[in-house]
Image (cartoon, rainbow, N blue to C red; front, side):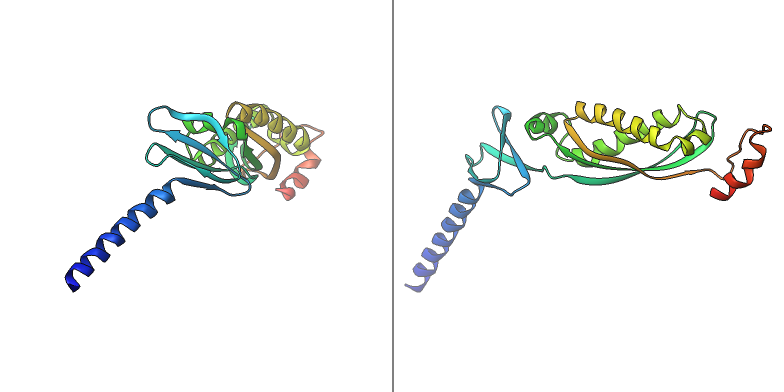
Length: 198
């Protein structure tokens, strides 16, 4: 009698656990500031982006991937060369977020870890491209123009990846110890000041 009762309890517990797993996989909870993309086994990624709330999914057939759509900061340090072949140590801070409507495309073309892969690589490429257009001395005197150029180029590049840049700023810029100023009668007296600032 006791053995039958334990067997019944075991079967009931197993059935309850399976039912709980099915019910749990049938719902997708999306928190504020997040969005979800739904993957269907037979059709692939749906073009619909799911917003905040609790949503029903068909167990086994559908699966959700949650994306953080809040602004995220990232510091990207780069060592590159200037137009006159001087070493430049530069750090750019960007604040970015994905375009919610483009999340299905982002997921299929880049993956869930787009925020780890895309911002550092595009920032690295743009910074090297912009810095290579200026001589080392100009990087100090024309910092605002360089920052604006980097921001414009990055915004255009980020748009192709489905990202919005909320802010772009140069936070750190130094020249290598081997930095030399071309010696002309007008720059000879500036050399001690430039070396002191470095």
